[in-house]
Amino acid sequence: MKTRPPTSYNIASHIFRVLLNEIEFHKRSERYLTKEETKALCRYYSNWIRRSEYCEHYFAQRIKKVVEILINSNTQLSVLDCGCGFGSESIAFGLLGAKVVGVDASTERVNVALKRLRYYREYYKKVDVSFENMNILDYACDELFDVAYAKEFITHVCPLSKFLEVVVKALKDGGYFILGDASPFNPIVYYNAWKTHKASLYTTVIDPKTGKNIPYAVERLIPSSYLKSLLQAYNFEILSEKFFGVPYVASSLIPVIGLIEDKFNLPFLALYEIVARKKHI
Image (tube, rainbow, N blue to C red; front, side, top):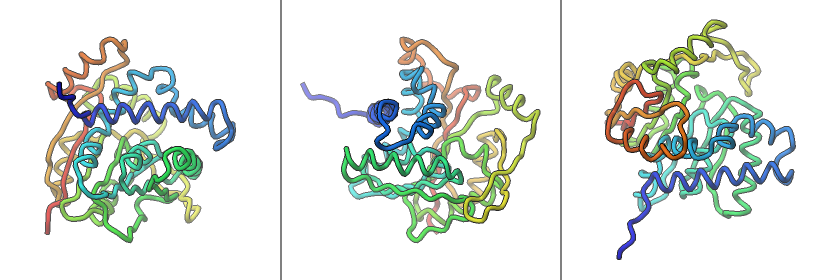
């Protein structure tokens, strides 16, 4: 009997377990990260550690489209990871053979991401990933990318219009822009954002290159419908829109939840993903 090839979801799930094993390694050893850096990494990924099966499902849901594009290509593709944070998605795409540039304004997170790369280069040899510690709005690339990826970054980047200009310039004609974020139509997401906004909707962070304050949006929820209209105005064709994400459920229910998410496109789910393609000029 012929075995079915693994799906992009299966591959993404496997990579999640690889990443989680790496985080567990740092908890036991200071070979690559200091204790403080490991604490910061574990704080950020605390849900991964406590609710691994649940988080594995949503990690796979978030990156499976990029995985699909990468594994169906006969050549090495390049990926721009916007707001890469500690670098997990950048590393994931690198493990699949992509040439990846991750960009983030947080010096702490980029430094940890660079040290994490040493682990993967030792155990997996060639991982073509680099990280830039800078404001994405100032990013200018030497070579154009096949894919731009932004996971839960739209809620923070400010101004959004300038970010879209950067992505348009960075992508090849026909290149993919895959972005996922929190949906304002989900009552739990909306309530949590409202609580956060009591303090302020906008704040500032330090630009690592200039030392100046740059604007930073705090959980500024943007409806996918508005985002799609913006993308179309910036010369993108919308290929798909998908909703997924429920509050924590027992691991035994995850396959059922996955089936529901794949079959029904329900706007009140917690997250959305838009897949767009830059039109040929």
